[in-house]
Length: 288
Image 1 (cartoon, rainbow, N blue to C red):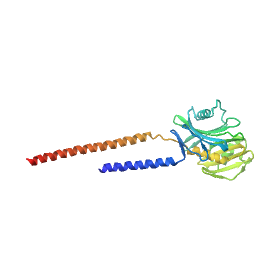
Image 2: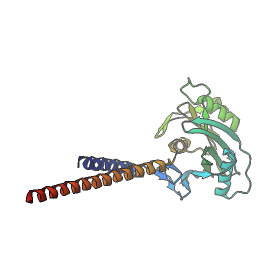
Image 3: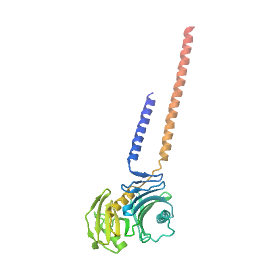
Image 4: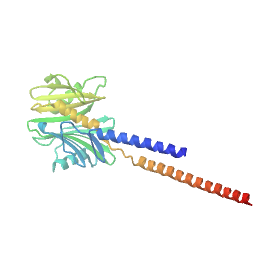
């Protein structure tokens, strides 16, 4: 009896824990698919479908997308996802290639100028036999935006300025000295340092030992807010864990407990039958 009561209490505790976890998951503003999860960006149109998370900000002509893709390597998978998404037959070579090691693995960082109107920044890493690809697309003909993640060259520094300077020189030919420092912007994802000139804008922020850089040429916009949304998607992304082994383990344990209870009941029934038979024999003996 005590064993059955203890098992019931344990089962109730597990159910309550699962219910609390499910409630927390439901409250979290996340896009959830069978393969991955990404934060839903506040203030952006949610255009997500079954196979891809996609968020669009019309005022900035910007779209952030996360999807799974196949390819021989990360760059090939990123190109395949981009071509399929935008219906492109051919792609120009990337204007930037790099790698950055984050907590969940090595991400390949790419930037392309698709045409005179559109540019795209992508990060991709392997996930099993496929690749996760996160893209930032801007389609404003009056500007060009590039998003990058770069490992700090000097981890003792508490600023992203060296990486801002190198990215600016590589992609625009300008140097940080050619721009004027603006005030730092405190955003939900962290603080962004912004430099600007009449023709260019660069925003940078540190997270861990990596610099997150956003570059904009042409008509200036709220670059830091766009960069914060892009970084939040990258850092908030996680692969949906495969919990099937734990499911089967739980089912197996539950079946073993039920089998043990059934065996216990059968053993007790047999013991009671023996006791009853003994009592009947004693009664017959007394009756003689």
